[in-house]
Image (cartoon, rainbow, N blue to C red; front, top):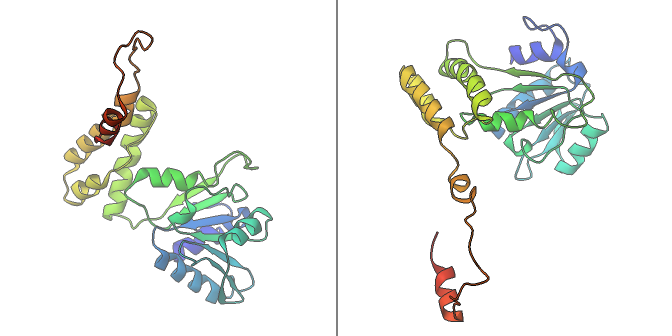
Length: 234
């Protein structure tokens, strides 16, 4: 919490400016986490005079106003962010897809999901067409020397070169967390490389279209045969 507030106020080590001045969204994969952080911020005198939004699923969205949480719809939150009325927004991964928040200029990941694509989706909420700033700032919070810290270091090193080579990053790296947690870093590297080199099965199946001489084809299926063919599994 102290590190989080340090970023928002601009007092954290290495931070030269208040991230709150640039408008900020905080992400966590857990609704309980963002709700707790919102409650804590709303209690603090320095944040009591501002409104804090919560964008979550299952009708859990709302706004902290004068220290109290009031529920509201997600469309209301999006409209208020676009209008510049909400400078601080907390979001679960319900906010990481299909949401345009280019009004915000900074992003803080309170936790790091094992799926790196999820991090890309979070970043995509503010790094998109219509972003008025020439750069956006992102902070990934993690405890020093924790498993998350080591995983982040390994992924940052490996995925950069993988992305340059393949143009994409692996969708799932759950096993990498396990290997690094067990201090099996060499095996973790192999898993990352294997995941990056594996083509999507749909790409493999449909990237090539074989020619067929449909004009002279003599095989015509009767309705029952069509039904049997279409009923078969992939």
